[in-house]
Length: 118
Image 1 (spheres, helix red, strand yellow):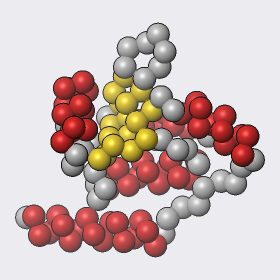
Image 2 (tube, helix red, strand yellow):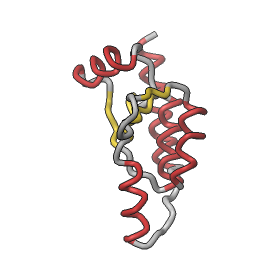
Image 3 (cartoon, helix red, strand yellow):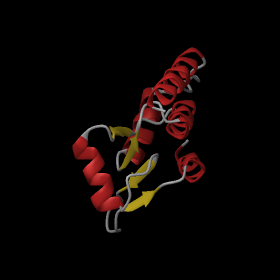
Image 4 (cartoon, one colour):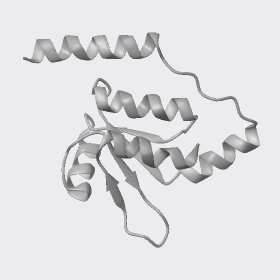
């Protein structure tokens, strides 16, 4: 099973590389405003996860620069598990001032949530 998963993961990464979407061209000042609005977001993910690829492609299509946390790194995995409640990816960590930290787990929900920043 590991071999099949590894091969499929490489195929997904290869196709994502070849057919990578383009980021929109914005003025530097406009992009800086968007970057400031998204600095409180972090995406916990695995590189070859198809649902994570979907979210990353959406981020690129919208020109969003959000921190990426690979849960293969034990520290990120522990943080996701301890604070988010489960080690499931993709997961968007939302840290807004004066609000509790929110953890958004479904790829479709994450993509819909990110549309507000584009």
